[in-house]
Image (cartoon, rainbow, N blue to C red; front, side, top):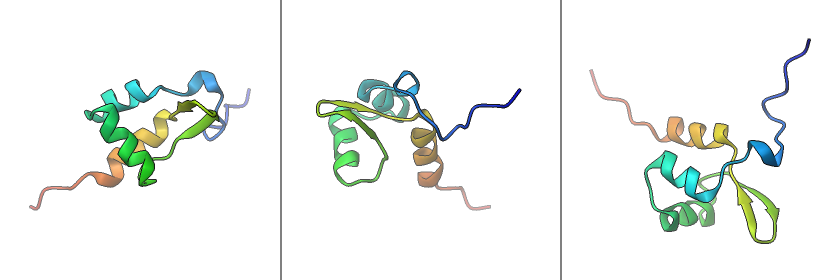
Length: 70
């Protein structure tokens, strides 16, 4: 049995603005700023419907992580 491609997304896999903001620990307004700056990937499902792939939110966190000096 083959595993689903993690890059393929259905709208059922997308999380809302509120969920993405919560995962990042920011306000929806801050999240919208990240979207405007194209710092965070999102999916425009319809004119007024936006979703986020959980993997994109996690990748955003990983890329922005600053490691401590040893």
